Image (cartoon, rainbow, N blue to C red; front, side, top):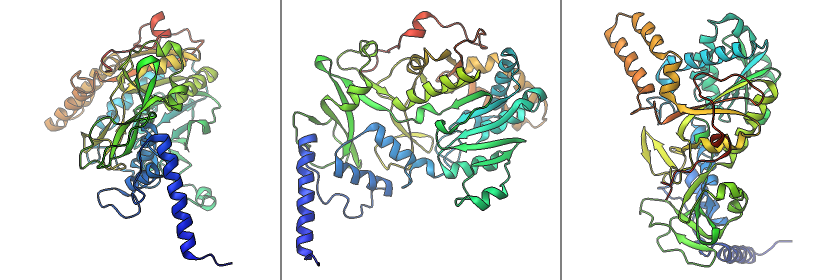
Length: 466
């Protein structure tokens, strides 16, 4: 039976108006039914997609926004591939100097010796970037034949097909015939052989199957995981800070919705809003009384539940299989409140503008990661990156490299790279290193000091969170 077009249109309009009424009850703001229905030249394709989601369902969490902006197949930032290095938006420590990966490899060799030289190990890297760090670590590991012989596999946890291809090439991997014949997506590597070791790629940490001692490195991984933002209100309430479409008119206020936190610039497509009372996310994430007791009214906090889940997995993996781990990232050993930001062309940028065109990040709360892992593994640190690299002999390695060339420019470049990695005014202080050992371990990792009872059992809070 043919249904009259006018009736279909009217039914569609009734459905949309009903949806609007539902959204007004939940969020107290009436979206424009025409938003997203026509192209907006100021929005990226992904930005239009996010805008459509908000119009259809209401404001979204900062966590959801980060997830979409970074990993969505519709133009997510990390689907672009070439985002690292001087020609990209940011540069990481391994891209600055080969010394970085070499010293990390030495740390693992040293503690492999301390833990009884297990005959079967596997490197596991979370968020491998371009693959430069793992390439340098494998090259340096070859200098220690018995250690290198123990490396059974390299596990690369990477979702981006484009970055997998880059890592595949950087590691010197060869395409396998069986992979090209059986895999419909043959251009996305899943298994290969590079630097004399079998390499496997995984979409998530749960896919990693371990049959030896894991040697885990998470370098600038946790900072890119989505965060929720909350603000402590009166009567122990937690308001969640959400992201809404930036409208020219102020939002209508209702008991469940407090409207915009600040006026949105005319060039900004999205804005922050805040719930009046506890959101479902706040009720679930901020329920631990020991955590909540640390904060006062007006404090803002950023919490990464995904980071907590992966940290618990990492700690359990290391304890179960007798492995080692290094977590290296920028952040502090306390909870912070407002570090969510964008990075584009090596400069900070408004995270709410042009989603998909920049990296989004938030400082890592090492005390939170350590708190999550406290019953599963030993966590040592964090200590500053400069302290860590100096203790492992970066100055001696620098001298070797300087002596290997007579080119003054190359020598100066080597010194400049060393300074950038270790100088407190550059990356030496803001980047921190935390070691993870099995719960039963009796050795103290170099160059960490024994943790205090307070560090083991309490989340630190810096009171510059307001």
